[in-house]
Image 1: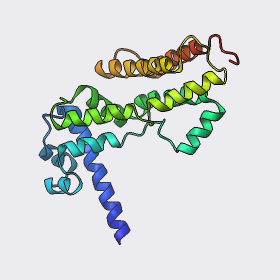
Image 2: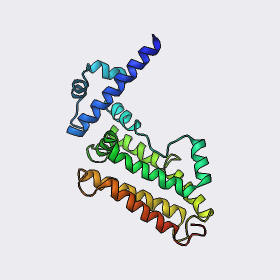
Image 3: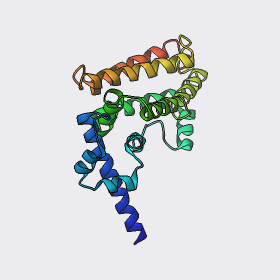
Image 4: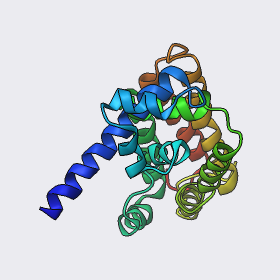
Amino acid sequence: MARRIREDASITRNHILDAAVECFSEQGVSQTTLDAIAQKAGVTRGAIYWHFEDKVDLFSAMIERLVCPLRIDKTERLRLMRENPLGFIHAATNKFLEKFTHDPNFCRVFEIFLHKCEYVGELAAIRHKYLEERESENHIDIILQAFTLAQKKGQIGMALTPHQATIALISLTDGMIFNWTKSKRQMFPMESYSTIILDAFFDMLQAGAKHP
C-alpha cells in the first residue's frame, strides 16, 4: 500500500511538472500562476503545495528533470574516457543535441530557461545555481578531463589547449541551442546541421594528432 501511494504521488508530481512546462511555454514564467498550472494539471492548488513550496521550487524541479548525457554513472564515464576520451565527448555532445529534435519536452524546458523567464529575485538565484553547475564536475570539468586525456593519448593536436577546446565546444553547442530555440526552431535544421558542425569541429581538433 505504501509503495502504491509513493508511486501515485510520483505520477501526480510529474503530471504537475508537465503542466507547468506547458504553462511556462505558453505564458512565460512570470505571467504563469499556480492556479493556471493546477487547472492545466487537473489538480487543486493544494496538491501543488503538497509537492512544491512555491513556483520557484516548481521551476527548479522542472529543470532538475533534465538528464544530460554527461551525467552518467561515474564509473562507466571514467571507463569510456580511459578507452576513448575523444570518442566519448563527441558521442555525448551528439546525444545531447539529438535530444532537442527527438525529445520535445527537453527542448521546451530549454526554451523556457533561455527565453521565457525573467531572472530577477529568487529566479535569479536559480539561474545562478544552474550556471554554477555548468562549471562543476558534471559539465565543464568532464569535458576538460576528456580533452586533456585525448591530447595525452595523441588523439588531438596542439592547436588548442584542452581548456580552449572545452570553451570552444561549449560556445559552439550553446550558440546552436540559443539561436535554434530563439528562432522557434526555424533558423536551421538542428538534427542535420549539428552533426555536420560537430564532425567538422572534432576533425579540426584532430589536425596534427599523433594517432588520429
